[in-house]
Amino acid sequence: MQFLLFLPALLAALNPHPGLAASVIRDYTLDIVNGPLAPDGFPRIGVLANGTFPGPVLTANKGDTLRVRVNNKLTDGSMRLSTSIDFDGVFIDTDNIFNEGSPFVTTCPFGPNTSYTYEFPLGNQTGSFWWYSQLSVQYADGLRGAVIIYDPKDPLAKLYDVDDESTILTVADWWHNTSTEGLASYMATQIIPVSDSGLFNGAGRYQGGPLTPYAAVSVTTGTRYRFRLINISARTSFTVSVDNHTLTVIETDGVATVPLEVDVITLHAGQRHSFVLTANQPVGNYWINAILSGGNPAHNLNLNATLGRGILRYEGAPDAEPTTPMTNGPPSPGPGALAESNLRPLVPIPAPEPDFNLTFVTFMPVNKTVWEINGVAYVPPLVPTLVKILDGASADADFNETENTFVFPANKVIQVTFPPNPDDELHPFHLHGNNFWVVKSNDSDVINTINPIRRDVSAMGNGGTILRFTTDKPGPWFFHCHIFYHFAAGLGSVIVGGPEQVRQQVHPPKAWEGLCPAYDALPPEQQ
Ligand SMILES: *[C@@H]1O[C@H](CO)[C@@H](O)[C@H](O)[C@H]1NC(C)=O
Ligand SMILES: *[C@@H]1O[C@H](CO)[C@@H](O)[C@H](O)[C@H]1NC(C)=O
Ligand SMILES: *[C@@H]1O[C@H](CO)[C@@H](O)[C@H](O)[C@H]1NC(C)=O
Ligand SMILES: *[C@@H]1O[C@H](CO)[C@@H](O)[C@H](O)[C@H]1NC(C)=O
Ligand SMILES: *[C@@H]1O[C@H](CO)[C@@H](O)[C@H](O)[C@H]1NC(C)=O
Ligand SMILES: *[C@@H]1O[C@H](CO)[C@@H](O)[C@H](O)[C@H]1NC(C)=O
Ligand SMILES: *[C@@H]1O[C@H](CO)[C@@H](O)[C@H](O)[C@H]1NC(C)=O
Ligand SMILES: *[C@@H]1O[C@H](CO)[C@@H](O)[C@H](O)[C@H]1NC(C)=O
Ligand SMILES: *[C@@H]1O[C@H](CO)[C@@H](O)[C@H](O)[C@H]1NC(C)=O
Ligand SMILES: *[C@@H]1O[C@H](CO)[C@@H](O)[C@H](O)[C@H]1NC(C)=O
Ligand SMILES: *[C@H]1O[C@@H](CO)[C@H](O)[C@@H](O)[C@@H]1NC(C)=O
Image (cartoon, rainbow, N blue to C red; front, side):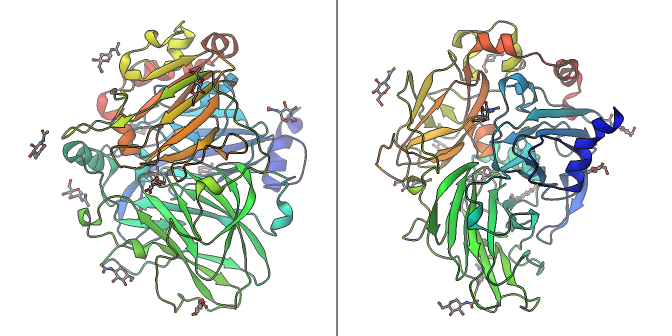
């Protein structure tokens, strides 16, 4: 019996992504600590999983169950002491929605010296995702990392030779100040703190700072790599290119795509892309340009976006920086740039006709740090949405107006139209637990209901966007701007599908039921 229980974990430990059909439990422990780090050469204390940034990569195979025990060992009261971990883009099923980690929607955060274990089957989903603290803007302090679900039978496997931990690429913005200072400054000034640096695979530089070594990615001539590019930034978009190499996009937010060759990829909040790069250039060192944009650089003279980069190093090349100039790479938008409207899913699914239409107009009043959807800024409720549903809430009117909560029957199609954005800011909207069809991308006037890309984050802008999704998976799902400063100022909503089905299907464990009473009992400085 003991042996049988241990066998899956043993198999998982021996072979990180075997081609085995057997489903296993991927058991991870994350110790959340306040620890020192200096990814761009500036030393500070962060909020880190196991003391590292980015945090540990969580990997699984299609069909596995992910189990993540999170031990909150935070001690530094200058940053948030509670936490709550969300697994961005992962289709957590209704039965396990209480482990979805969205504070005040599906759960409550948990305080220092306590633990919580998130567990859910991964179903048929595969691709590149990430985990992070969904509490306030805490992830800006470092609590973020990748989640990769490998497909042992990837239909695009013939396009690449290597896909392992060495091909996971992360880009992140980084601040020398804590997120609590940043949030206070934002609330006081309406100006999102501009980051001090951009990090590629956890390393970067700021203007006038030390010459911190850039992260190098090793390749061998003639080999094809599946790079999984994940934007784990908190506020900033990244424009990524590799000097003298083309990038063939094959995945967007966990959805396999028709291969699309580009020179440069722009990643907005929360977005992920896999691309294939063939090491077909002369042996040498090449710049990987990871150029951030977001905010007025005049607000932080430490920021020099051009310093955001890494190195593609061929086997046989010296352990040195490229001798070519640091550029920002090809322009995006531009002729070689990835445009969302050009992406096609490998398996096209027409967007079904909507049963309900919503229009979301985003707005920030003058001189007030509040972001509204249709005139209402989201305020997290004291009692999470899921608790209210389990207690009988069934209609919009059962929620406070400031919960921006929209209730629909199960198995319906919802269309959300974002008219051209009058405030002229970028808002990457992210739907938890589900993909949407991007029927109209901000970057195109074309309405495509035949084979639009499906994904879970799309950037709204002044071009206008139309999304469709279904309520086939009952539950309350956060739908919010992924710029967490905007989100913290109210740019969020909750889509509830099938409240009756939720009450039938969802049976949370005692450990979850204890989270809210424990959190509510914490002194505010430990929340
Ligand atoms: C994190 O650290 C804990 C304690 O040392 C360890 O048990 C766990 O395996 C580590 N997790 C990962 C993902 O490395
Ligand atoms: C957590 O536990 C440690 C060690 O037992 C203790 O020193 C610390 O005060 C505790 N923190 C809180 C917030 O209770
Ligand atoms: C996974 O896909 C198979 C085959 O399409 C289907 O029968 C099964 O219901 C799916 N499982 C889940 C959890 O969606
Ligand atoms: C960092 O915080 C300090 C103190 O709150 C503030 O004076 C400074 O302007 C902040 N730096 C940036 C770049 O926002
Ligand atoms: C990339 O190609 C250009 C010519 O297109 C060349 O000048 C440059 O040296 C090449 N870069 C490297 C690192 O070889
Ligand atoms: C930013 O860094 C690049 C590369 O080192 C340098 O060429 C440029 O002058 C820097 N920008 C400023 C404003 O100093
Ligand atoms: C939703 O809007 C579309 C136009 O985009 C329209 O064709 C459809 O009839 C509307 N559906 C409902 C239920 O209002
Ligand atoms: C906003 O604040 C600025 C600077 O304090 C002030 O000049 C302006 O009149 C304010 N605008 C409104 C509409 O309150
Ligand atoms: C409803 O929202 C208003 C405005 O944010 C707030 O003052 C009130 O306390 C909320 N009521 C409940 C029950 O959460
Ligand atoms: C949105 O589209 C407009 C018009 O095409 C364009 O100017 C803007 O850069 C786009 N924004 C994003 C975030 O793609
Ligand atoms: C990366 O892109 C920026 C800009 O769109 C967002 O603000 C970030 O939230 C995003 N990062 C993640 C992890 O989504």
